Image (cartoon, rainbow, N blue to C red; front, side, top):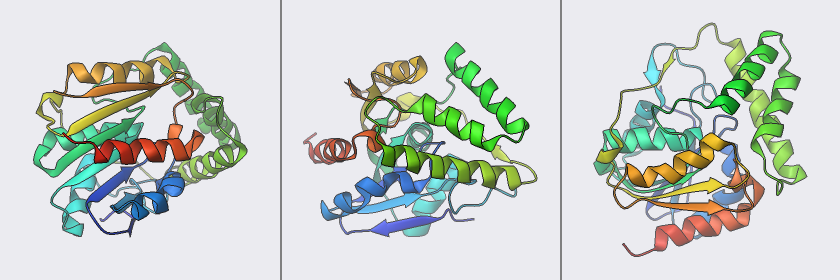
Length: 251
């Protein structure tokens, strides 16, 4: 299947990959500004999120992203990936490095990362709420977990909407066939890489971006002192400028 997607603008392709608590609508604040800045912007929903149904057979999200690029005739692209979207960007860029020119990773996950105690505790609480059918409780748990102090009412409302839809779509599926995808060696990544962390994020997602320069040649780490886990929703304009400034840098 082809993932649900949107395209806007003309110029070099820029692919936006969403967090696992959101869907492609998380990029609404960046969507028009990035297209106006001279990029052909593509955003998609992973399977089980937004308008993409849950898979009917084993698949990988990284494979779906590469299939989408093939479908669109995109030979090379820059990527902005948030959280889980950052992890998928890393998997795809390690597997097919020639397809990716630039990676800007916002509080990314990392292939092979073992969750620390805080994430494990959160996952157990979320699983218990969902098993009890308490979607409202699971949504509020996520709202409280992922935002820093800069998040406004609009960002909170948007996250509630996206997270609720994901829970409902995934709960309606008879079985989730998603697989993690192939093992990857991040040393194969050749794209320029900026890994961003938020000072108010959980420990795992502060540590992963700080460690990525150890795995990817030339990668840089930047900490945002005001940010939680979803900086593109917390300070949309500042993150849009961060993206455009990074993509316009000279190598």
